[in-house]
Image (tube, rainbow, N blue to C red):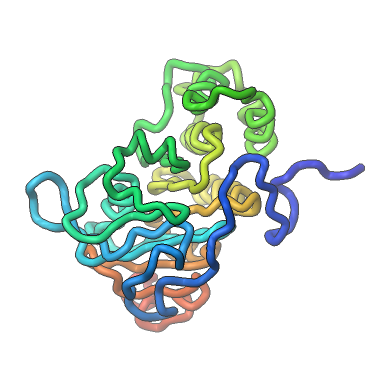
Length: 277
């Protein structure tokens, strides 16, 4: 029997039916194993370039921080507690004002846009907490994810159910009754219902068991196989870097190390300082 699931093919076979990104450059705006450098917008499909800023009128949390990702890649942001990882993600999504730097998506400077407008431009964002409607069913959550669409969403919903089979089984169940890992699957599925150009995940494995974490990472890999760029903040640094095409280690809101996941895992300084040796 022929396997028609677009998520089960090899990493190089990108199925674009769940998203509509135009191909970006594969150039990396960060020197492998080195610090971030200023990059032109054309260097990456999504780039938060030399971002400096904080919340409101408070002190800067980010200091010339650069993160980027291209289609089909998983980019992971790791670092110690208080390093500015989630702040960097929120800056890319427009949840704080940048005092310096810019955010470019698919060649367009979106630095002045609200988070809502960035969703319209193709950003799918899954926050760490409060990321589902607990009183609604799984299916209603997915339908809510497609609120910006005016076309037929049924094919996309079937793709979400193929990606997360347990959600098909529980589609009529209230999302608040699900396990932590299943709730995260609902949250990711809801973001994918917008057919995003890029998917951003803030601590997707927070509070779940190691087995569930591995399963979620497997699903994230499958999403990346469709061609969607994935930018992810993750506390489980070693496991996240194992699946990362590129990684960024932040310290006090600055780029400390960057490179491929394998390069960072092999770097003795990164291992000693951030991965427990």
